Length: 165
Image (cartoon, rainbow, N blue to C red; front, side, top):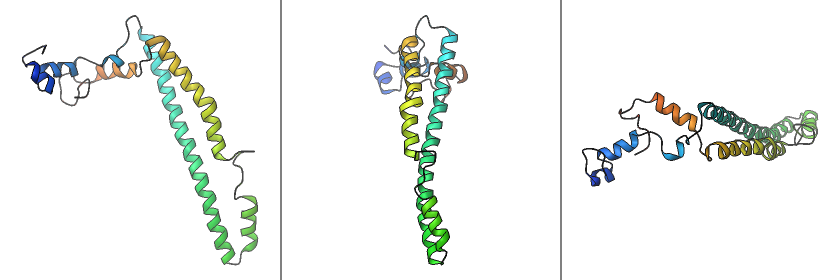
């Protein structure tokens, strides 16, 4: 079935009106609101998803902290070497003794912070977000955003299709 002026073959190739209509008919099934789900639930799930996205960014920053602290620690080796070459052994020895390899917080290097965050807050957040989606909308993701896209795009205009080709 082509749903318009094109043939089934044209539609299958993406040249006919059926393919165009499919792209224009809104989100795919994975991004459509299930029957009986109200606006407040979709909005609440959208906020929960937005909060998770913020936590994902926090996690990225935590990994940046981890990598930057590690890089700084190795640069201290170079500084110590240069201080030694310059005859500043006292400051070089203090840096080696007091700073190189030091815990960034009591008892922990940054890899331990990352692991504790991942195993605790982060995994719990992801679990609860997933369970809420599974319980309320059959696990569907980004329903709020899919509906927002439908409201904001210009239907029928190239570059504003509901779905990829």
